Length: 163
Length: 163
Image 1 (cartoon, rainbow over the protein chains, first blue to last red):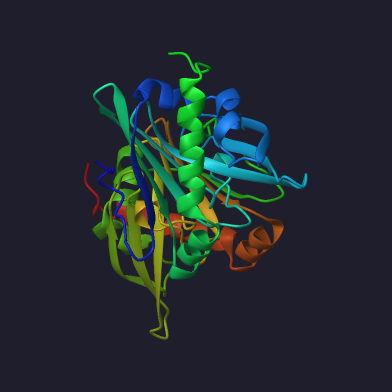
Image 2 (image 1 turned 90 degrees about the vertical axis):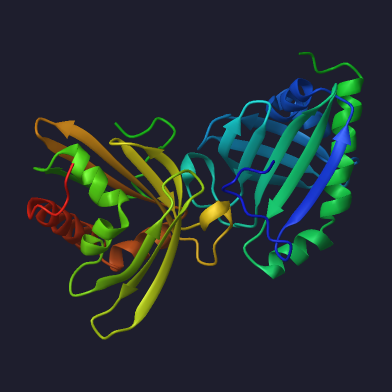
């Protein structure tokens, strides 16, 4: 169900697919509300110390990730597509307002498909070359994105995200 | 009339504004039709030897620019916003399908505003840092973008673009 404009290249891209037992609406809300996103978006014991977002094409997602040792890593991405309850596309090749970024690395596509009372969740990391894909794998794409997805589901099930 | 999401930074960005005496519809068509675009998009005696485009967010604009000495320079950009007769946003930080590019440099915003029977034309080059802005100036942004705009107007007036 990936957008027809997006062509996944198995040599360059990384894909995480999972069926999760939370409804599409709550998964979408957890992804698009700063106070929810900061609760699950960093793999513990890492944390998010600040988060703001402007949910429209060209809008920015800004967050600061904090290591267990207390070092802070600011991160900026730019939303490209925002289709409520269906698809988010965002990239770190640009900042808000489509301004080119200093460290372009990947574009993320996140898709939510209704699956009974749950959600078929798919996240794709699109890279420009083999080196970036490898680096992302070594940084722990599969473990990292899987871990935060589990954190998101647990957070939603704890009842903190309401429809 | 620049899109509210786009914030022009005079230190980083370059702007060309001009009133042109061709209608919005033909200027839009000249920009968005490959067989027209290739006729005016390179400052003569440079030329465009091939051009194809997929006019939607995430779609690619591909073209090959040829120097007077015969050297060819392939170029790929990605459309971000396509608002017919009003605004085009495209970037070389990504290829088609939002895939990060090898040589990210700038995002272009092109705006068409109706002005009587003519058009108020505005093109903005958005850069990520001062170095890129300087490089673009030295490459001849003002002369180059101005020259091809004059070529576009002359081409339209010659009657080759029809509404």
